[in-house]
Length: 201
Image 1 (cartoon, rainbow, N blue to C red):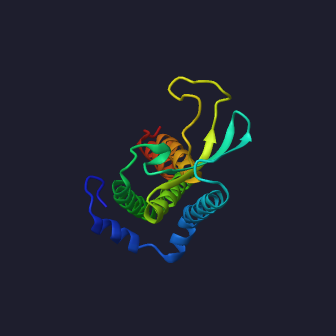
Image 2: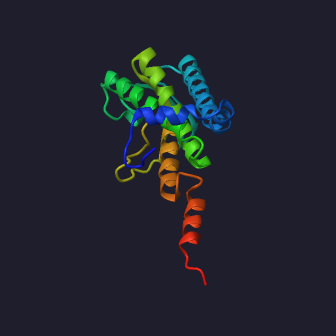
Image 3: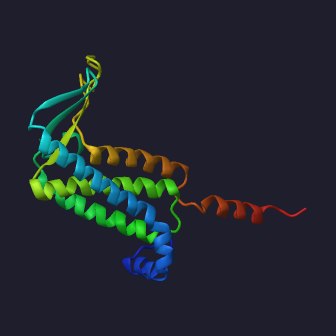
């Protein structure tokens, strides 16, 4: 495919040239991360919902960690509350596009990129299910800064869940992956180019 042009026809054409074995080899890890993460996210949310009252606070580590069950109708960490359908539509489009890219480029992506994409998609799907089924996301993890009032952060971190954590970690890993090179063959190609361009003695 020409690097200066893009079309979905070229994308699907490239995807059709791969064998099932190639897809299985390159996609098993990110898809395993997605399924395991969604399962753990739903499991932890269900356990908290069944055993902790809405708004109830259970201290696990004094002045540091507690379980506080709340419903968040915004994005991760309560950003842009009250925009349920906006987030549902944006999440649907984003997940589909990222999945398409993952499948399209799966044979070239580095291990770090596959892990980061799996974490982001898994986290997004976990919160997406909550918005569709409940109209809000179930958050329950609260970190308190040992009684200190930190600049910009306040006395505690925003209440979050497993999916939020996965999205955050996945985004950080994605940035690192892009900075160090997201294609596992880029380094070899660069070395080959440098070798070919060196003048012979």
